[in-house]
Image (cartoon, rainbow, N blue to C red; front, side, top):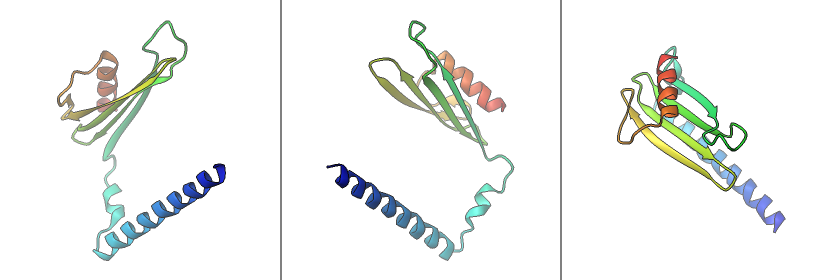
Length: 117
């Protein structure tokens, strides 16, 4: 069983490597210059905050990852970890504000810190 998992892992890895190569070749053959996407000085903003939402439990195992572009649109990914489970939430951001869901106070602080970075 363990050998089967190793073989499947290698097949998966090389399959993803091959698909990446094909995608790169296809973009190059169409005349797209992939490096131009990263020419602007700061096209995106990233911020990671670790915190403890449950004060009775120890450790800052929960986190908020905020990914924004230059228009302050993107996503906030929140992971809440406790002893029994881990929950992950994603909320869309448009123009520096939540698109359709309310943000927690920690998410709001992360969003403001990311916008100002």
